[in-house]
Amino acid sequence: MYNRILILFSLAIILANAAIAENTSNFDLLMSGHGDLGSYIYFKQNGVYFIDTELKGSIETLRYRRFYFLLELNEDVYMGRKYRSNMVFDPNRGSWAFGMIGRLEFQKYFLETQMYHNCFHDIGRWMEIDYSIYWNSPRLGFGTKGYLSKYKYHRFDYTKPGLYFPKKIDYYCQAGFYAPRGASWQKNHDYDFTLLTNLNLSFARYKQVGFEIESNNLWVINNRHNLKRRHALNFDCIIFGKSGVVITYIGWWPDDTQSLRNRDGKTVFGLHFGF
Image (cartoon, rainbow, N blue to C red; front, side, top):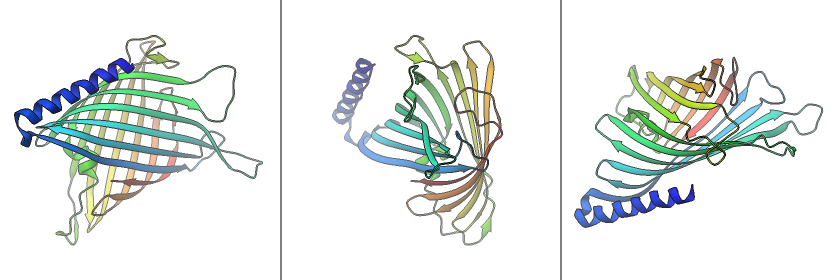
């Protein structure tokens, strides 16, 4: 794994040097960051589902013409609720992810390849059996540029003072592959193939306050060749600032049959910061 990472970094350095030598105007060392911080509380709480928190950091390291090379680091903490205790918060499980992304951006759309390492671990649980999960997954994705954080979170517009209806739709599709198998690449999960189909509808805006609906869908082919899925709907109220957004939302999972952090039928209230 580390050899592969070193090879990819070496290729990026070679590409950067070639770009500088050929035409300096085609190359930029960006080091530009974008991030997400969000937390949501379940309406129906128990020892497993109370509050989940999500953090995501993304760095655009360099650009060569239309090509961008990014590094991403994600962390989720899952918290249950303790009963008959002075401390009600019980972080019980977490997930961490590191990804490298090569992206081509066009006028309206983008195309990207990813290599991601994800892992899931218990927090504060000492068990003889190791229930940790990890995978290494190459991915292919495409979508509209408005779906990307650097555009989605920077739509501050003071030129339209009243209520209007943008009827703007952005989408993202991604195919993920979980191969090769074996302990060096995959552990304790049943994913063989995944497909993300996400849609974001901006339907109303009043000055710097926007109203949107998100439809996030995960389709899974597991190692028994069965189709599993997770469907989520978010109803967002967004305050746009000059450098980012604050979002409050109601989230609902009407159907979830896949195996990881199953939230079937659950509803949450969330707060999200994006920049």
